[in-house]
Length: 164
Image (tube, rainbow, N blue to C red; front, side, top):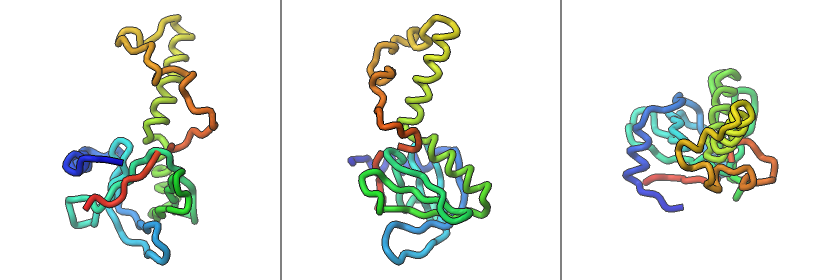
């Protein structure tokens, strides 16, 4: 995937939907958990050394799976390579659940499915298409017929690793 490093770093400075210091272990065999400031901004999960302003890296939360691991921990793996897993350790099971839910809702595909669902609900209630006023009601990306049929609704894309 191509990206503009400066734009990505600017995005990492935006207000986060969630941020916390978590234990983080990368996908390499034998890696140990390190404390990282983890920040969820739109559909990117940025991670930083706790005392630094520039991110060490970012994960693009598309076509990924978020799974509960040991109590108080979760992992993120990517559809293209399920063995490439990032592990996170939270302070509590409650914090772990909050992170897992936020990460699952962060993908573009999840937001798109939600928009289509609520669009159809509003249409049933009012008889009008709420997207018509914006002139986008006929675009393919807002149609039910363009949804994938694999049944997955969780955090669904690819990953973006180290920024430097």
